[in-house]
Length: 152
Image 1 (tube, rainbow, N blue to C red):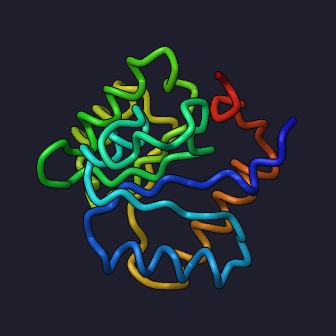
Image 2: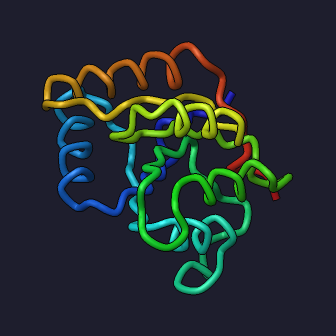
């Protein structure tokens, strides 16, 4: 099993404030893994498919995990989730939907589209720190992540 701690987590989040809170929570929880942010679904697709500004990223390099906001302009989280999970080369990447929505429709649609987890965004920093610690414990200590970033 490869050391996934050096493999970035892709955060698809349009809100700079929400991303900053998440970044601080990772630091405060001691989870030292690189975070790479895409500001919308289209930018994330460009990164994952190595197009546009990301055409020079090595082809076999993918994030260890995706934290995905649903409500974004343009290509929203639902569309991105469906695109990734329908792609043979990308569908193994675990995706955690991280959304303010508690709508049954959003939750059910996310799981139907292949989300591996659905977490409602916490209300405060302590909640974010606890959430990050849970992600670290479950996805990076207990689980064996796929080696999709190492495929050619």
